[in-house]
Length: 475
Image (cartoon, rainbow, N blue to C red; front, side):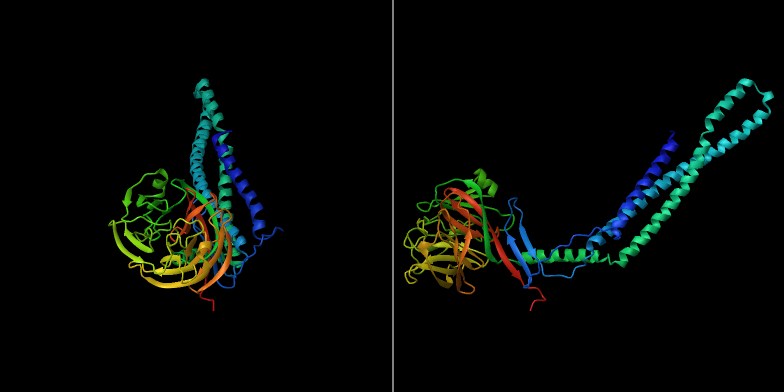
């Protein structure tokens, strides 16, 4: 087949494929077939947006699952979306046909020019044929052969004329189809999809703003652990600063629960894992226990053989404040179940700095005190009825103390006390004590995770918190 005929075959093949596609797609789109779109069931909370937030998934990505209030959404969004997609395909087809038309018109002009040449040649040939007696027979034969070679192009020309008309007609049909589809789209309210899309974008923006402000929630679940490193003795502490900037990921490491004053610093978790220390601090006093905390650039720890709390600045290498925690037991008088001079537990959450301990005045039961981070003065205290010696470990989240019932296998969060309402409840939140002996368990509000020292393993637990956000329409 000659090149012009090949081009015509490609054009007709394209038209056939497009027509076939439209015959298959349009009936299902406008509802001429019997296929029904699946419907989905929506959950409609009564109290507004219910948010389950979690620190991270196994890939380290932040999770926020939202159950939204009931909305009157358009039930025809799926069909509207199909119409929208079809309109886009029609527009793409129109553009392609326009390109094809230009190319065909160009070739058509070429063939028209060739037709003129052929007609002129034919006329000349006839003239020569009439006067062939004056020409040599050989020259006449050669000219006739060339003419015979050009004769097949005449039907090709006619075919090009027909195809040019066909393309023009097809362009007009596509234009009419676009008009019809636009009318159908307007008739069934397909532009609700645009409105819905804008509402989704608005919702995403509102949720991002909400999550920035969202800090507090109720503990629902503990997952993990993720083992970060294996190092040190059975007992120790490691931590990051919950008030540090996003770019500041320094890690501090304090091995053992007694007879030590060395704090090791790492610039990042990666450096911590590889053992690349960035700095070492030699504290002026030995610490007691493993329940230290780094908060806003300073280390807070319990001075060995005392109920004195020390605030030590990493920036200046100096003690900024120290204060005795009045009546607090120390030196294994009221430790956690595992001992280790864990009488005084310092911790931080979204609200501020806390000390958890026990006193004779409260019969050895846990006392919670909120501290001034600068002066270490007790701002307010709450006396609970949970025996300190029966607690495995504890941590604060959003002003609520969560207490585990053991430091061994089978431990779970068994008791919680809210400083907001001054009430307690018994809970049942299990977690996996993978290495059988937890000697440190602290919550980090920035990371939304629990840092733990588990029998010489530095591990992280993920926490899931539950939030209820009141909407403007809620009364």
